[in-house]
Amino acid sequence: MDALVITEDHALVIDERPTPRPGPRDALVRVAGAGLNRADLLQRNGFYPAPPGVPADVPGMEFSGVVTSIGDAVTRVAPGDEVFGIVGGGAQAEYLVVHELHCAPVPTGFDLVTAGGVPEIFITAHDAMRTIAAVQPGERVLIHAVGSGVGTAALQLARVWGCPTVGTARTPDKLERALGLGLDHAVLAARELDPDALAQRILDEAGPCDVVVDLVGGEYVRADVAAAAPRGRIVLIGLVAGSRTSSFPVGAVLGKRLTLVGTTLRGRSVEEKAAATAAFTRDVVPLLAAGTVGPVMEATFPFDRAEEAYSLLASDTTFGKVVLTP
Image (tube, rainbow, N blue to C red; front, side, top):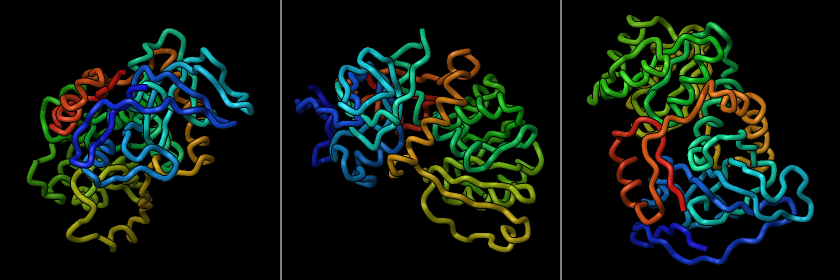
């Protein structure tokens, strides 16, 4: 099979690899679409190694495709099923082996390539807001990097759940497009960030926020704490702005009785990923089937244009998802 491979000098090439064989609880999937994520950019540059048990040099953490064969003990999927889901890596290839419990059914009639840009963003957003933060109708949700893949998914889910939304981005164009998706309050974040000033703009525009979905990290965490409502929940997902902050307002965290949680999907156990996938199948797949929510697509590229796709995502100009297809 063809696979997109990261070379020792961090280039991307298409290489021939053996087609994997499914284990007893696995399905072999012929990949139709593989969403591109910032974690792939990090892995390509040597900063985010794949977890044990997945290809070390084939990126890709989400997929859509058709089941072609199954292991002896599989009961949840069958050959011919259209599925999508999350994996630790290896999705940017013609074929992929995935645990049956990490497969969700693609809604009937849903474009199969586009489906490759769904699982990572919607599972992450659902897990952060519903499972971790236990967001309730009427609670205000702040989403940093609202124009990102996860940001657009979080915005749509919050809207469905009856939550007013505040979104930040560093360009007016992304905020304008987010308003078109139903964003209630748009706040421009300066490229030379002043966390206190950003928090004040959020408070002036919308008021204190009950749940914060932080896809940026770094100094944004200080703004999260300042803009959070009493007993607010802050979920840290991304580190685009860095893994450290110059100072952390511990007193405000205590005084407001805030909850601060970090989360990733990639390194979770089989059981944890199965639980997240089951929750996504229960709560989000019906919304996708009804057209109530859906992935916002920036572009689709074939594997032989992977360098272009990676460069586009790294440019920070995208709104929504970039998807690769064999």
